[in-house]
Image (cartoon, rainbow, N blue to C red; front, side):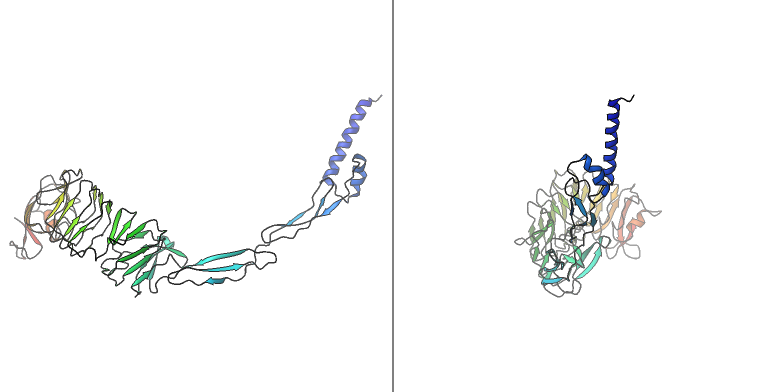
Length: 419
């Protein structure tokens, strides 16, 4: 005899199985739905709603029907967004040498009001020369064939940023002013070499790297590094660098031939390579106690320079009684002043002579200690053949004299011989 309770359980299980299968297969217009589901659900699923939505430029479309009563299924098929159908670009404002322009284009599909705009960059002064740098990602600029006195450097060229003013880029030019965009991040120290008429450098207010003081006519980097000073300001005998300057850039005072005196600030930390190269009238210079770095040949070719003095409290550098610049422990001879003449004896503590140390210095006799290696006796430390002679079979420690071509003593050429 069958158990009524078990029969009831079996009946319930059968109905659940039928319900699950029906839910998986059913659609509102399927006859099987009404035959099976209607006995189970008093409110049968018989209502379907069309849900067709046209695709737009940016949104998908749908085609299909949805069960509005029980939400049992959704037969929608999605269609891709159409994307914008852009019209041609239309120029709103034409660019000039100085100012940027603007152009715009619109989507021409119905019910789409989207548009795009892009900048037309200023062209800059005609004739400027642009050179690709940084693997072809940016440009360096120089004067090229430009003849204008007032130069405008553009921020972009051929859709790439202009980031650099080249070494000697505007040297020996007749320009009187130059406008520098925000994109410029590097200006070489020789960029305006011998541009005697240049007194105005206009820096875009958004440039985070450079600034120009119109009163002192000084170009700064990071507000504390002196990069360049107008020739008009150094045409006088004396020049004082502002107190807030902590660094003098490479070539900053290159060939300032009228400058006789330079006053360095007490907080100065660094003097760049060739910073005072070729200052023919410079007579004396005092290195403050704060200086920790002096670049290569910073005081080279200064024929009137009598002393390179160093504050006695400087922990890094030392000046001899003759005004010769050494490191603090006098193991490295850095630079002799160009005005040193006659005879000079290099201390026995010296193990290195820097390149340019005695280049164009007016001595005609020098005593050199032994033990200086070829690597430490740098090229071009002296004019002429002295270095080669020192490392010859008859060289080494001793006294050397400039002589004439016949081997006798003299000062007319750079031929050295050993006493």
